[in-house]
Length: 220
Image 1 (cartoon, rainbow, N blue to C red):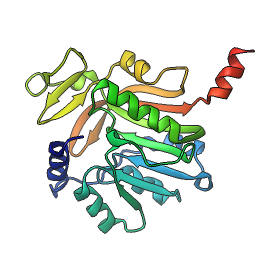
Image 2: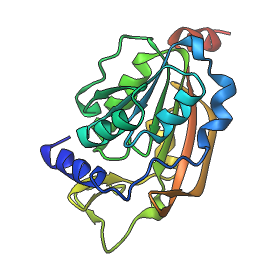
Image 3: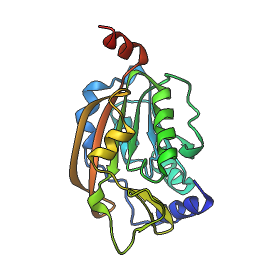
């Protein structure tokens, strides 16, 4: 991401009206996770509403974001949660197979297609075998004709308020999270409140498919 992206998010998270509200979307996945099985990374955590919910359940959570303003507030309010300032577009500093799960809640849709693919591949690399990627993405119905303008021949990528935003339909989700790499546990579109607004989004719960498992399956 650029310096303008960092300025945008620092300004956004300096707004005291923003609150770390959590709508309970992670509850369905808790039976698939275990506090003793390793770190859960909250990638693009913002004010850490997901990290806070997971930490309250006893998980080892690392909250990562581009915005130091967001992380500083999270550290003040929840000093027990580890934080890391991170630009995911520059690569993830996690060892191969080291993470139990990655949560990416409305944080993977700010990039051109090639960067999005690279980030998703990096997440997959860092996940343990059978590790989970739990993400939510802007639905295409969230597009605002008065705000979002095309910037390339990519029909899903738009410039908006000084940053890029990608919008997803089911086909786009299948393109970035192919069946060869991911087992789909959940895929649904719905409305949810976020920072005092209603958003239409896609929730996608995914389990990493190891290459070895895929090869064994193909060979019968």
